[in-house]
Image 1 (cartoon, one colour):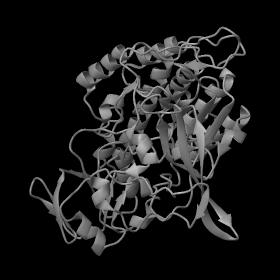
Image 2 (spheres, one colour):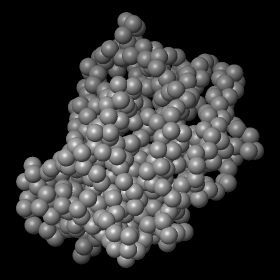
Image 3 (cartoon, one colour):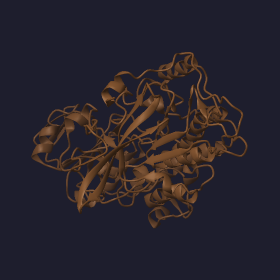
Image 4 (cartoon, rainbow, N blue to C red):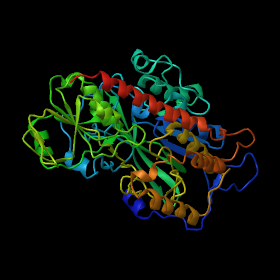
Length: 504
């Protein structure tokens, strides 16, 4: 059966169905999910969400097969650093309408080998030299594995000897260590991309098409094959495909001056902008960090385009630097002149750097739609309406690593048949109320400030480990939020000091 026909025939459970209820008390019985025993699980991604999902699944001791597919060369997700050359050309139309990273054509017969895929897949690293965490390490750590105490001189100079922030390489290694220390490294297939995952309604299993970049007879090639699983955990993250809004004249500027239009994902440090006139766009963390960074080399002032809606955790302290001049949104661009909505303009602009977020794309799940840059039909941001599909990490900022852990343990228990979910009507009500409170967009996935209720609801679903099998979840600790917020205050104090010492 073709992938298209299977997608067309996908069906969902009835609104009153129950899932994740064990059918047998025998320790040797396979876990039962609805009417089907879950024996094999595929995890997509080996970033922070993926590695903790693997650990949770393994500790249940309930599955015959656990396979992890990671398209990068190592574990770490968006913390993987490499010397990627930033793209000189961007498909601004697709980035603006959020259709970039479309599904690729699947070979007609598998397994097979083809020339390397040329379509851009947005696997380039977002890491720049000197990048540090912006969250206290204690608030980031998983409950059983602490992030190592490694402090950079840069961070000590700005935040003190007890700085709670860590260099990006420490976090990357920490993520991999969660795999290796727990003995799960052998479960991961690296350099392997999940290109298609479709549930076959006849078998109730997921047919997964995979592509691995490798050398064959000394030349790069793609090897394609397929595997079948009972369930899937999507832990692929949503910070890969940059979003750049449509602005009249922007595409023409980019064509005339290759490399002049960029996204903060491609930022590699301030030296490139020495003596240049730079405009940054955005008011959240990446735009703030970039604007501050380039003040050390770019022509003053750096122009920061903001709408007045700043990151709720960090505010606008970074933009108060005297070498940064805030301007309203861009109305249009002519030649190298950027025009703003208040009628003013800046001529001879060399670079425009967009810190405008990302688009959440799931090209490997063609039957699972996104809506308003989020995935609908997911209860507690984890349990999709399709009952053997789970999402780990489908949330906004705030205590993210710990949230991933609670999500992973709850999902693993449900798949293992040791925990159950409420009826579909209750799950649908949860989403409906969330939309009413936070909107039907990215803000829907923001857990803050309701951390405790969210953690505790997942912990209640998971329950404790049974017969010593499973990863335990401690009770929510308010100190996590205190550390989380105190880290933000440290960064704001740093910006205030820099602002006082800055000279035009």
